[in-house]
Length: 414
Image 1 (tube, rainbow, N blue to C red):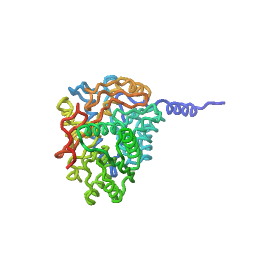
Image 2 (tube, rainbow, N blue to C red):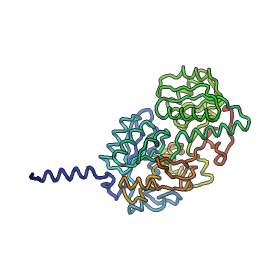
Image 3 (spheres, rainbow, N blue to C red):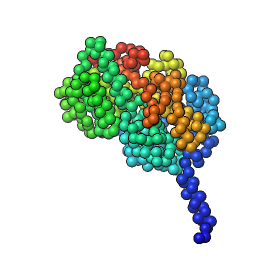
Image 4 (cartoon, rainbow, N blue to C red):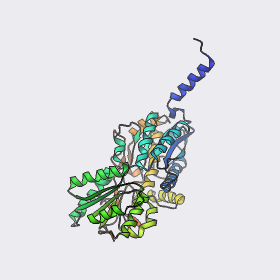
């Protein structure tokens, strides 16, 4: 059989295509894919995320005097000072668009890692593509507990998931009951994608374990044009606490409908999402004095750790906003990934994965109130301690756990 020059070239091309994509990345720069909704109903999330990631990249690429990985000195020393370059992709809150964009980032943009995605439903497809190509994926802000339980080798999450967040809520309820507050019945209200479903399941399980009665458990259609029937059900149930798991537009509609129908629960304890977003408070904040939301970040931490306030100021100069639960996790997502790439001394996917597995970052070297960042065998950090925040006088203050709290909870809400 005669082997032609064309056969040799084709064979070389095929071999290159099969080689680990990260290994072919240039080490003069480290290219990381960032995938978020940059258009559509959740576009503001993506815009804010861009600013958070750009703030983190600036800290890595320039020289800052912070006790934060890679802040001191320029670039990634393990790769000769290579600079981080971010490539942003828009998944439009569509899991299939996310799948296609993840593939494009890996095969065309030659990224060595991917970070995302806000919606947990999109994280499902993006992480599957990363797994197929052997490219590490870091869930910066996805909270669905099922994400890290799918047996993926290249999936990592530094932040808490909704079982951890919900546990903090129930620890808070237990503490309030010990002080004599009446909390017996709960109303669960959650949207029907993986985020809402997983959140509702976690809360139902904990309620049963801790002896709280579920007065009503409502799953509603995400992006529903009306929530009147659902709010009537909530009003009829008249639970001590309303526990919504809703993205921003649904959250705004919920609060407006509650006002129209005269439904005022004693307390709202929200599963973050829309209830951490400035857009929601700009729209209906006057109706939410005293609402409680879980979170991973507390700006109050700046009182104990001044660098948190200084880094927040850098983000605010770019975005016009303080860090919130999402933007803080996005910022830390890039820091954690870059720190692993530095130790890997490589842009090869497998080597970065091995470095992520070996991560052990003290909480003091983050901007979060976490004990540390250390991943278990499924890629989950179990030391990311949640906090509960209450919206008082136009800002969030930390009310739980006691070691992080700067104020007592106001109950019932006004």
